[in-house]
Length: 280
Ligand SMILES: NC(=O)c1ccc[n+]([C@@H]2O[C@H](COP(=O)([O-])OP(=O)(O)OC[C@H]3O[C@@H](n4cnc5c(N)ncnc54)[C@H](O)[C@@H]3O)[C@@H](O)[C@H]2O)c1
Image (cartoon, rainbow, N blue to C red; front, top):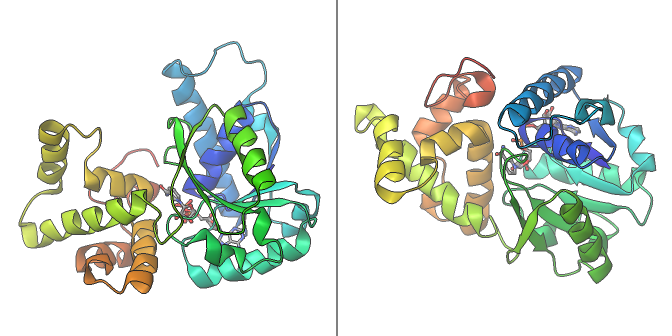
């Protein structure tokens, strides 16, 4: 397995694959991102063992099954690629032509995109039948289900291989229709945008918004805690994609989010977002 992009999702998905006993190559353009990914995987492994979601008797540390490299040439050996680079259309488009050229013709290209229709991503390759959307949730090691999206051209054999892969990871599958944001982010992103707007100029504290959703509505996490977990830069990029497709103002990233990202307040990944975090 090859995972491209070693940020929040790439590191977590590589960890899920390693936990399932498979080897992964994690590829990033930045050595510093690979360093951070190794640190996060080691920390998450400790947390999983503490929470007893992982057997204590696993002799091999999953980290040992994850190779890391900045050399995209490693993709020439890939059979199944999971793309996890930032939610920016131009960046992903350029990367897909690179991946498509490097990989064997029958390799599967799965994308972790939060919002770009699979049908569009497929057009950036010469193998639209081998492209599929695997929208893992964050943190992927703790989430049992994956939103899976097939594009118009996705073949049955690609679907079957993806199902087998997710089964090995112990994930349940919920298929969603293709289209901007699929189902989850089509609903979640405008909710986060609205929740962020409410915090403008102290109108409502972030903790109040989140407590209302947790204590009154029964959600496990409030919208602003969720935004911090996703990464506010990823939230803004995802809203930008939705806005580009839908043209609806509800999807335009609100000033609060844009200013926080410009100020380096990216959520958990930077130690500061709507909340402050000791450990990244
Ligand atoms: N963060 C989440 O909660 C979440 C959840 C589901 C899906 N996603 C999706 O997963 C994808 C990745 O999101 P993320 O939050 O992990 O982003 P991130 O910003 O945390 O990490 C992206 C990584 O990609 C690397 N990268 C950039 N260009 C690259 C290239 N050309 N080749 C290799 N690596 C490259 C960056 O250096 C960075 O380490 C996005 O499409 C996002 O929408 C994110």
